[in-house]
Image (tube, rainbow, N blue to C red; front, side, top):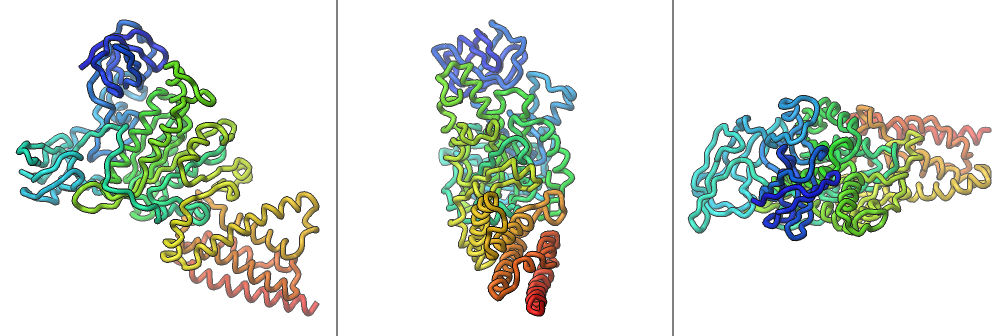
Length: 590
């Protein structure tokens, strides 16, 4: 262990001398209060340390001691339902120890040491194992079975394996390697946060992560193992979109990182998630969620750690064969922390003061997503999808963080403050957003939902794009200048916007829409447009077609529970045909 003393303090940056034996990214303890820090730069015997706690009151001469190990997280039973700070300290245990105010230098274990978990072995003595193999399971919550894996780098034969109740530190198995050396295995393992966990191979992103949000699933889907960015100005609904995805995305495990955002948003998550019912299990949503809180009033340097802590925990569950969704809210705050540390290190600034390595750091984070075959002798498929919110100042996405993110991610959900102010949720602009996964997943949608899914989706997009062009004409010369077919097209596009894309996050039925129902909703809007167009060509006036009573029923279809959708769908189709015939007859008589 390397020991030194503080030479200089500049905010969260501490420069220590006498650290010649220390290594890059070693965790250090600063001062007699044992504040946690990490070495980010070394010059001779001087080490620059970013301290993850408040540095007020520190001065030159205070001791600095390296632990000789990189920043690591504890992985094992007890992660689910926990809420951690940026360096994986459980906030509930800190509160029990020191009260509501977060003090400095508090040391509490990340996983609770006193809880005994019921370990059920799935292998026996004499079995051959390698890194990543599952040796037993623990029922962590009612909905999550925690799979205890052999740590990466260990292989051999099981010498002994136990069953019963154990703490995370007690030995449940012993593996003897080829050299005859015994490796005792507790249920807990450690992993350095800056190193991605290994896997056998990555798979093609050709399956969607179903979210139940119509504008996302239909127009701009994200693949399982995909990466998406949600940029938008203040008040455009980034956090609400992320909350919706955390609640409803088709993921077994959700890791939610509140990185530098307002504390009250994290409070909303904490208050809401335990009360929300998971649609698949009927249990509390918190029973499959890990929360990491590093809000705007917490130390700046820990924002970087929180991002890596979260993705390492997510990779661990991915390796068990689970589908994991990670929400980072927001990567802009993390980039601001990088900028602050870079400035204090006196590095050459890049664009807008951000460090020159901003793009590569973002890429290192997002590239850890993916659908993979996990390590081990059993071929387990797991996926880690990453959805990062970006908060560009003033909503200007030409700034460096947004642009660096767009170069990496394949899905761009562009939030629009104008839509948000019109109370259109989700406020995802259909003209400026995109998904590069659509073509890869077209075969899945056509075979698993409806054979004409991609064709119907393309027609919807065409109508919305045509509407944008027609609106420009309307603003110049008025609605009367449009031909009847164009007026009908505008009405159909309005129906797509108001009846299909607009979704109520707080309505018990409309908050989540199954893919089959999404297809029915698209088909109803297009059925109205196609049949009305035929009637228009047969002499029916456009005013008569716009005012059909069935349009109200098409609009209310989204509030129909899934069980009654097929009957309601058929009834609306029949009513549409009947009303068009009556309108044609009425106008012919007139």
